[in-house]
Image 1 (tube, rainbow, N blue to C red):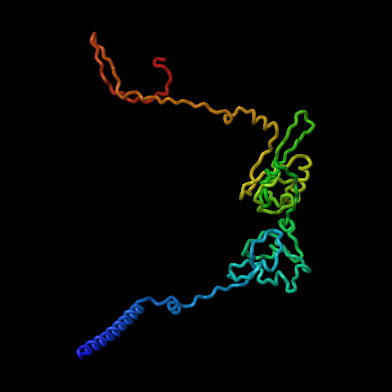
Image 2: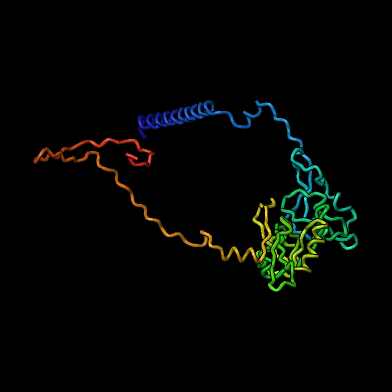
Length: 321
């Protein structure tokens, strides 16, 4: 091999190595410049900020899943979670031991049941659950000072089964004040308003999807109202009038008997008879210019005169008396 060939190959190798070294140095410098220009990472920025004060929390007992009225409560149905102290109800339970003792045995200790519907993740309050050997009784849902009384209903008086526990109803009383009269006269009165329904037959389910015609409806009333309902059932007929959701305020009512109903049905009120349409004809205003014929002897001439608006006279007497 010739000498100049070897020199050329050696020079090429040296230049190649130099090119690689220079390129590597340039790339490293460019990468370092990019890192210098980039903003600091979030963690690094947060290290320079003062630490926020921690919110005090406390453990509370919540439901693992939905519980309906009367469902048995087991330890698996509850769990502990941490909540901010300012959001915890005053009577919230803070430990499962407050509900279930250490030696809890559902066979020997008896079951614990829900006294109201409890939703998942809802904080457990003492009045929402029974003690050991408890049961989901209707008495747990009656408010203090009230009583539960049942009335007979059918498909008509019970609003076709559309009334469910928790609804508000009015009680309509239909009676015959004078049964010995030759012509029977019936009377209708609303004796109670905004009465809460506790149960339908033997069911307290407030989330039934279909209407069911019931035979009895259990109502929450005062002691005196319970006595009035018992007497009214013996003397006449009771009907439920379902109220709209959220409409709890009492309204003004009037009694209605057979005579008033007959007068209402036979009255010649304008509301019963359709009114005939009245045709209104628009009166045209007189023309602004009037034509007057002026006669002089045997010659006549037509003259246009502007009409002036004269004030309307209130005197109806003829001129000259």
